[in-house]
Image 1 (cartoon, one colour):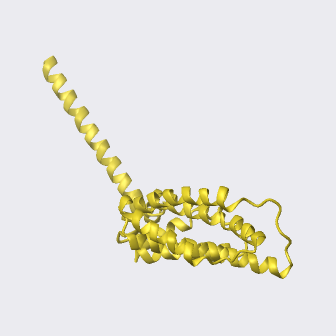
Image 2: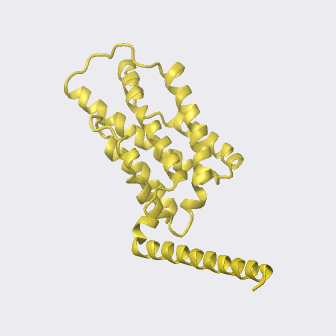
Length: 210
């Protein structure tokens, strides 16, 4: 056999071996996927995870709002301001690629969830004649700027998650992401009304995904 023929045979052998190995890898990956179908679909969508994380951050401010209102003897409901917020969101929504109604429905659910926590807190404080709190965060200088910042972040996150929510498996994706360990850890056990409020906020997303 000539050197040229030997090189050609060797190259052919190497190529054949590589193709066999590649085929083995492909078949092995396919078998692994079939043997563990739940694992393939068991990861939280990062876009939904980001959205739900921001929703939790917004809800976490409800206790500060409640303390401020308790000290100020202010009502929990403020329908005029709430409508102003929703009207403004309807105008901003198209800038983020969102339908005005979707933006309004989403934030209305967040507002209602926040008021559920405030109401539960007020009920507890009233039952034990809670005195005014010492130096709670100021509504105008601390809480509202934080809410305004979260509003922009939530609009962006909702826009990014829109394709997932409106996909064929949107509802399942919401339910799966809601069970993520990082989100479960973010539900404070000692805040009255929080768990119920959190479920209310998530339900809105599930309804969008239907």
